Length: 227
Image 1: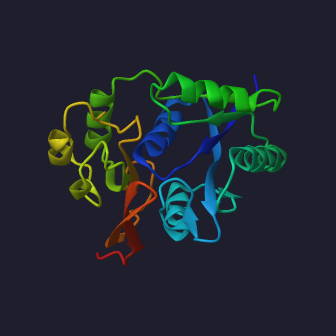
Image 2: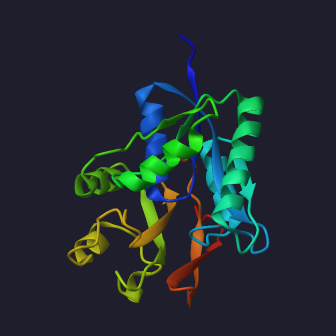
């Protein structure tokens, strides 16, 4: 049977990073690339506002090519889907991709949307973290060496003071009741700087914290690695 060739949807956050780790450990296929939606106008990833140079540094540390899906701003869902599918088609031709993996955890509507989007592409969806209890999943990530910063949060669900903090055991213990430990309902998003899926750390330093379009963003800047 041919080995699966997997493209991983990449946000730069802990769930995508841990999905990469799990896919590599499982031996069920080869991860051949990462794919991220970017906004060239701002030189940032579309959803979390992370600078593209940091996401590129992650991909380099993961030893994988990064396929950048360039999106206009503002961007309708129709344009997003068209650009996403076009990039998938190109990846299939260049890398022989057979599957697309996502770091989703339990939101059924999100999974159904991904599955619908892939219908007719000849590519099968994978959800390597699906259904795992998020409290124990976060514990496994931290125990496995993942270090991540909170780079975006919804202030209606989580206090602004969490923006920019490392998501370590102490921070996780401070999350209020009703906030998912992995932020799966959109409470917060992260950027991974260390982990077993990266050959070297992605060194960052804190930038400014701003509130925009109903979300709080903690900017990260590339920093030299001190040894």
